[in-house]
Length: 304
Image (cartoon, rainbow, N blue to C red; front, side, top):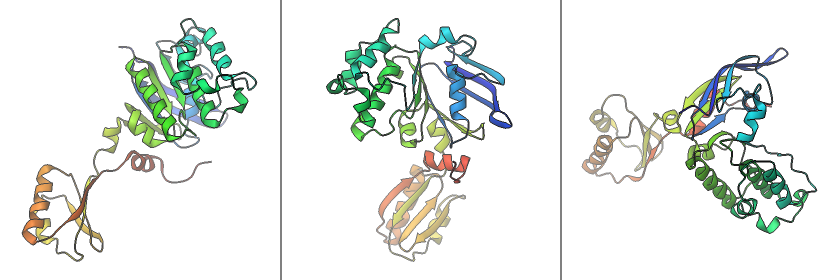
């Protein structure tokens, strides 16, 4: 199956600034890819080029098999774009705004169904300027979805939403993906990425610095922690475990074993506890999260 988005060697410069520097990424058809990175990393420029709003200085970009700049008129009816500020007319009523967008597409979803699905029926006659931030965000998503796009570009789709609305949006995006819609997502909410994304690309200074599925990116760095009496002698447990495990008392009464947490490793630890008369409590398996990977790839410096 042809990739929904394929970017190879993308370069975009603004005067002396190289915003995107030889970037590659692929969004496979029917999948969701999360494009992550700090402010100024090149995410927005990359997405704007894929949407056909900017022209690359070098490299190739194909979106649904088309050049998004040269074939913009053919491409735009097939994509949906959700920005944090979607350009809805502030004086228009919510329902009117969505029906106007639907009227501009060949085979739209029923606007009333989308209003109901996104919890906007009660404000269908409310002017856009009077919507809450969360309601406006849901209207932005409805406007992106109403034209039955083959590909969705989403920018912070759940920013400012309460937990109930976030889960509603997540369910809708999962349904869209199951129906074959491809999704390119940019967000700073890493828990959202862990729940939704099939693939992740992390960029910094216009280049890819890490990529893969969430499980691939967070693999490794496993550890087991437990609590027990302070000052235990760990030498016998250290000898019982294979080479490569690091054992330490991280603070009094709190123990950590770094290394692959396997059934055999767990059995060794629990057998040592039983033989030593140690009652271990609060056993927990820890793994690095996507935030750890992100910070390792992009650093901890705050970007403007």
